[in-house]
Amino acid sequence: MEMTVQELYSAACEQHKIKNYDAVFKILDEIKRRDPKFKEAYYLEAWTWNCLGNSVKQYYALEKILPLLDFAAPEEKNFATNVLSHIGEACVALGLLKEAKEFFVLVVKMFNSPDTGLVTSNLIFCENSFEDSSPDSFRALYEEYKKVLADIKPYPKKFYAHKKIRVGFLSADFRNHPVINQSWSLLTKLDKNLFDVYFYSNVKKPDVVTEYLRKTAGTWRDILNLTDKVAAKLIRDDEIDILFDMDGHMGNNRLRVAAYCPASVQISGIDYMNSTGLECFDYFLSDETCAGDENFFTEKVLRLPHCLVCYEPSTKLEPAAAPPCLKNNFVTFGSFNKFRKITDAMWNAWKKILDAVPNSRLLLKDDLFATVDGKNFVSNKLKSFGFDLNRVEMRPRTSTYLVEYGDMDIALDTFPYNGGVTTCEALYMGVPVVSLYGTRHGARVGLSFLKNVGLDELAVDSYEKYIERAVGLAGDWELLTLLRRNLRTMMKKSPLMDSANYLREIQAAFIKILSDERNANA
Image (cartoon, rainbow, N blue to C red; front, side, top):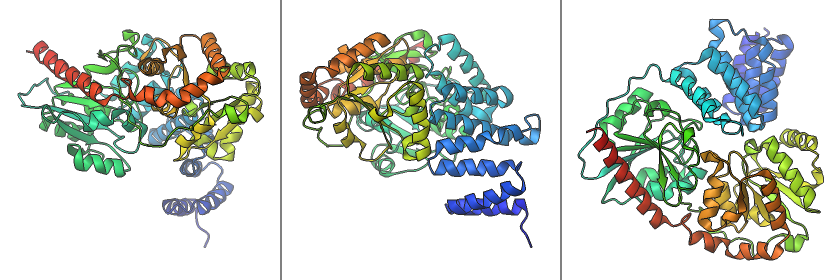
């Protein structure tokens, strides 16, 4: 007896669970042959392509569902929300930020509720990629996010008389993740005579870093499977003095937990490089250089004197002895930033840089380049900007990517969303970084890092200067050689890697803000 379409779909789901993706595609082809309007088949196809790391085919599979959706049908609300949010996420991976924003806006306008908080966060996250974003445009989105919090009743302010300050860190990234390289001192080296440290972990896939922190760094609380209300009560019962949310509007955040105001003082920053826009946070961590225009913040800006982070590398790998231009006889520019950070204006700038430096190359690295479809997608984009594809190399992400800085002479930062750990890694491997800065926090990270290392002349405030600085540096091979030899030493001696100084500054800041808030609420 022939299986029904629904039975075939159930069989495909079972094959997906055991990662037999070839069988999944075969069954889905049969379903679509029998019933081309069976929406769930395209959705499972998209999810399967996502599991295989193919954002291009994921996008096209989801796109086929759009004309089949009945947005007015209440029973389709959850399915439509998932489709629109996932196609938005696929657009983000493909660098189609304007399109992603449109899909996220649809979800927010039609279905905004406590269940769509992460979608609204995605929308706010996208806003960081647009140069014309203003404090007002962000505030409008923050107002939308407040609807996500409509069911939450915050705890009243309460202060405690602990002998030591209880600091709680809230994150989904207590794992092998770039943010760890910028927060290791903060997470593991606070003075135990002054602070008790708590971790509120929303990690989905624990690893050796997770296990190390769980066993050695402080009191560990796993909140992954707790509701927001229960997680907030846990923090409240722990009588936390300062709650530090590290995720902001990044993926898998638990902003709804923070919205209960379970701690005496709440601060955000480090992983997400902009204001949360939420009144539950008293402070945002920054520094004197990075903060920029405070009109972008709803929080008070906590400015550390030197650098908002302390970089600690996860490798002892030595940088290449010399810049590759000496052996190649041409200069290689590069960016290991996520593809989604590269805007059209940045592509135009990079094209002008290559045009101005004869025989130069551009080296890119991203998950997108792991598939033929991804490479073809980017190749077509580059052609539209006039790039000679023979001068561009696209490499997939690998665990040994730091070695590949040996193939790069000059790193090009992204704008308006600067690189963070990516910039630190390039500098640590002896590769100078040219950065463009603006007025808001996320567009000034490169400036802060370069200034702290003593290379603030590589940070500029216009595209014209950005192109000029990159081209000028490409013509000075002697300087490139000198930087390759000395950049790591410069970093180690700078505030960017001075753990002891960083701890002094941030501990003093924690003590001060707790005292200030206690006095203000007395």
